[in-house]
Length: 152
Image 1 (cartoon, rainbow, N blue to C red):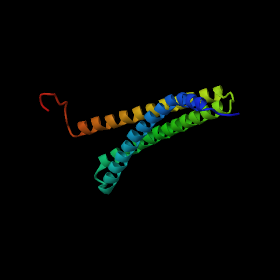
Image 2 (image 1 turned 90 degrees about the horizontal axis):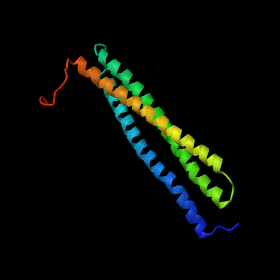
Image 3 (image 1 turned 45 degrees about the vertical axis):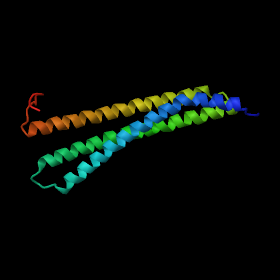
Image 4 (image 1 turned 90 degrees about the vertical axis):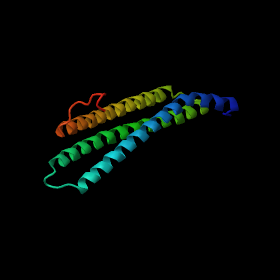
């Protein structure tokens, strides 16, 4: 078994699409970790100012805790997706270089990676809904009404 330069080029061509997907997942992970960092910073700030009279701080801390769990699940699924895509790329190389038929494992890992990415986006969307609901609750608690564009 002798691998030729043309064979390497063909393997690289096969792995280009998963590499682009991996790049997108990496960007998604950056967004998620930034959101998690902001949630952690906000919860630390609230914990420093926590007093028995500040009931709304307890409510906000509970919401931040829920948001952090949703983001953690999203990060976990994104990382799983990235790992599966890396395995797809490695398996493509091994399959072609060693001339082993691994089409079904490659397809399975790719589908699992896509499903993990879908799950990650679902948790991310749920976290956004919780954050938006929190903003709306805070606005109503302050007695704020709807701000029209001519008032802004």
